[in-house]
Image 1 (cartoon, rainbow, N blue to C red):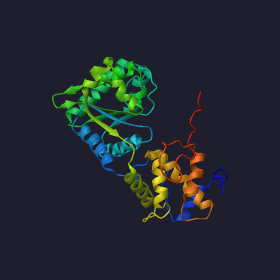
Image 2: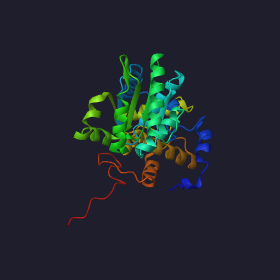
Image 3: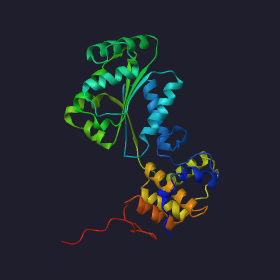
Length: 302
């Protein structure tokens, strides 16, 4: 039976009652309350917090698309807010140097002409000195940093020169896809690379982590014992999503909706096959009952 999930625009709200959930477990939005604290995520978050508290200066967080970098940044923002630590968060990295300084001024609420680089720098320096004298720190977070132009990265590097004897006055976190690491290896970025004190990298989940991740999110949504996805479905979800949390969320959300539409409390491999086709999933070939099904066909011999 083919289920049209588009016919259920209210699906996530309806399947909550069907499965006894109090919230939607597989939203794509980065929600720190649903953070699955795997060993690598705990280590990454601890490194970010340690780097900020120790005034290390530059910290780099990288990972493939969908591995949870933005969720890590959201957790860090919650930590900074709870400790009354001012921070600027730049989520759009397609900026000119002028736009970069304007956004920094807005986020830090600097009392200056926000279109003047000179005035922004003076106001920022004064704020940082005042906070450093009070033994406080300040943080600049840049997401999607792999898209930053050379001129903007150079301006960010120069901001890292603001320091006292006790350490850097501005803690700068650059988060991005693996292209960011490759960019920093280029000769023209060697000065910035030398200033990086800490590096964190998020990798996709292994099979055990995928199972634990799904159970963790369902538990936070109200299902203490995961009963929707049997072992063979969990194994296929991991293989087809390759352990990418964002893809896992998409697949599981659609599986819950399909199960609800078919009035089944448990998903199966046929449902997963349908969801995989609808999401246009592409995964490496492997062994198993459904291995190769739904994948792109091999090219015709020339």
